[in-house]
Length: 223
Image (cartoon, rainbow, N blue to C red; front, top):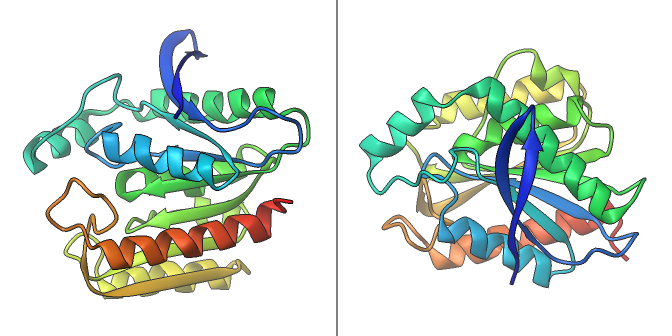
């Protein structure tokens, strides 16, 4: 089990949930939460990463606000201060590096809304060497600004991430020379990996987690 730590992010106080070891040589994963906020599902996911041998940190991008409905979540996502989130993303990465020591290898993992920062961060911090996405994408120049490998988990049917858009996303990454592996999970929809959601599908979620740990172990060189 982890706990919350206070961060200084561009002169503001913020918090992140941190779990896992502190020893030099440990690899780290920064987890960016979905539009619901920093939910118990996300904390539990960070704890699972810690149990798998990684140090994990999950910043609270919405300052403690957690949505229970789609309408509330949309409001949080639409009104969020993206500049402040950028600063908090980097502050969390820097805190994890401080925890693990110079040369620490990190991955960034984004769940839905958080996928943007999982793709954005490697271009801003050299220690971030891999990106993992759960049913989320992003677009624009950042797709070619970094060269790290990408693992993506996507639903079979998803109104938020259409087949055409995911295919375009993958094509853009490949055109930029990126190593990318995207998985589709039959019988699943958006939020399939979050146990508190009606869309949760345990078999798909477990397979996605196993694939994530294997990917992280490969690219973070976990001993």
